[in-house]
Structures are given as C-alpha cells and as structure tokens.
Length: 198
Ligand SMILES: Nc1ncnc2c1ncn2[C@@H]1O[C@H](COP(=O)(O)OP(=O)(O)OP(=O)(O)O)[C@@H](O)[C@H]1O
Image (cartoon, rainbow, N blue to C red; front, side, top):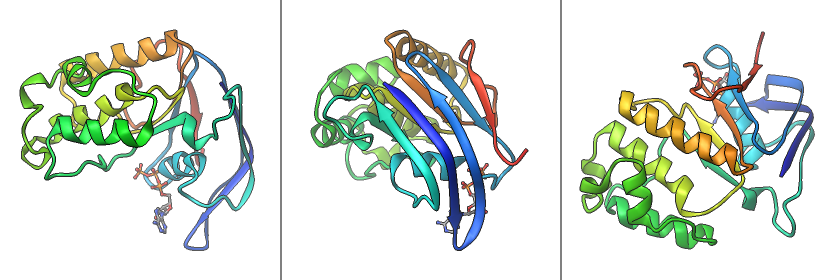
C-alpha cells in the first residue's frame, strides 16, 4: 500500500489547525508525527481515517485492491476505545468480527502483547497500561496495512514498550506502514519525522 497526502488542510471549530500538508508513506515505512500540544497530530490521524473533516487537499491510497482507505487501516487513538464491561478477550473478539479478515485469535493477540493472565477480566478493572496493551492487541486480530497510532507508548512500562517495538518492527518487515503521533522518541529504526506547527 502507498499513502499519499497532498496539500491537506484541517479546521476545527472553524479555526485553522494546519494546512498545506503533503507527504508519502510506502511499504515498510514509519513516520513519527511530532509537535507541541494542540499542533494537530491527532487531527491529522483522524483526517486520514476519515473521522475528522478535511477542509482542503487530498488523502489517497494505492495498492489496496477493492478496499477503501478506511478498510485498510487501524486507528488506535489515545482513548482506548474499549468496552469496560467486556473482558479483554471479548473486546478483541468484537473487534475481529467488526473488522473482518481475522489474523491472530484474541487469546494469541493478548499473549503477544503480554496480557494472557488478564484476558478474562472486564477491561474496566484493568490498569491504564493493561488497557493500552488490549488496545494494541487489536492491531493483531485483523490484518490492516496502515497503522495510525496516537501516542502508542503512553502508559506502557519498559517491557510493554519493547513488546510494542517488536510488534511494529514485524509489521514494517511485512510491508506495513505506520504513522504515529508521539511526544516520545518512536522505537523504530529509520523512522522519519513529520513535525507539525514548526
Ligand atoms: N472535537 C474538537 N472540536 C473542536 N476543536 C478541537 C477538537 N479536537 C481538537 N480540537 C482542536 O484542534 C487543535 C488540534 O488538536 P489535536 O488534538 O489534533 O492536537 P495534538 O497535536 O494531537 O495535541 P496533543 O499533543 O495535546 O495530543 C487544538 O487546538 C484543539 O483544541
């Protein structure tokens, strides 16, 4: 898959967030989106995912066959988007059913993100870092080439950060793409940087 963003402009509540933004992302490439609080990092991810309106410009993808761009990406926002009354495993089964194209089984995805023991607990009882690991496990239950990650390292301990680094490296090695909004250095060798509001 190839992602192309051309002259993108976004407004929120009528106020300019950014404009004239252009970049390309191809198979095996990662880009860290950086910038001060409010620079528009989450807005950019939302605009690519089709959740935030675009004021001007184009976002397009090639190499995705019959799928739409929305069907070719995962967005893990900084709110985890999990249902607190369901267990981790149920949340992942729900996500897999919704997203289609199952990759890892929920239990295996949780084992991969280091959470096998907590799989049967309602997500509301999990710690912030454990919930983050469940949200990241969603990446593994359905294969999607483009990962949009908003502050993926937040709440993860050192071991969790290493696990995530390994998962992202595998995704890139398989030809995936990663666009990650982050205040912390991204643990991906060779990742580029897109600085907003510079
Ligand atoms: N739902 C919304 N309605 C109106 N304005 C919004 C909304 N969400 C964000 N904004 C505004 O858009 C601008 C960009 O916000 P955004 O969350 O994209 O920044 P960010 O770079 O991700 O910030 P942070 O580093 O704090 O996460 C901010 O000025 C913010 O107030």
